[in-house]
Amino acid sequence: MGEVLGKFRGQGRDGQKKRSVSQMFTQLEEITYFNRSEIKKWYKLFLKDCPDGHLKEERFVAFYTASFQSGDLERKECLAKQIFRTFDRDGSGTVDFREFMCGMSALLRGTTPERLKWAFNMYDLDGNGEISMQELLHVLKLMYELRSPDATLEELELAETDLREVADKIFKELDEDGDGNLQCREFVDGLTRMPYLFRMADGRPIMQ
Image (cartoon, rainbow, N blue to C red):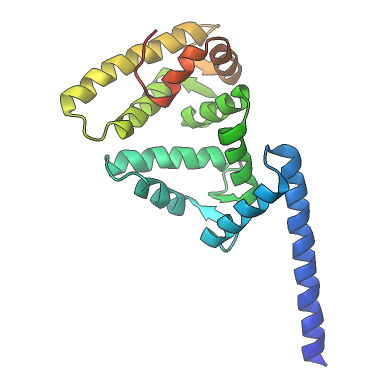
């Protein structure tokens, strides 16, 4: 009898889990740019890598750094951790499937403002809701160095000079109140109005 009851309880838990997953899929259809079929495919891939349903920072960092065959490991890890934190919106130290899909939706299919908000969160290293000149320059340098793993020290120094000019230009154009920090509204509205500056956000020292 106990064995039979155990099976019923197990089936009940399975049914409850399926309903919960189905509800999550429905919610993600409403808040992301993915359809149900795409969400299901992402879910299978996510569970394959994260059977417990949570992506941990160390696993994400390991995957990200392994994706680049060259470049300084410490710099790759630093940028990977910051990217991970933009997914980990609740600061739990892990990313669940909902957080993952919301982040991927903004990155892959989001509107320009949505992608800019995601970028803002990546630049906001201390998470205080503002971007300082140092934070902007720090991430610009990281991204540029990852793009140029074979660059010599002299080339990196020259690039840093260019990137500092880029950061100065972005602040000059976007820091409306002149307080030395960029608010999310200033960042998003400014880069939407001046799309050529958006290229500065990927670490390319291109001046126009």
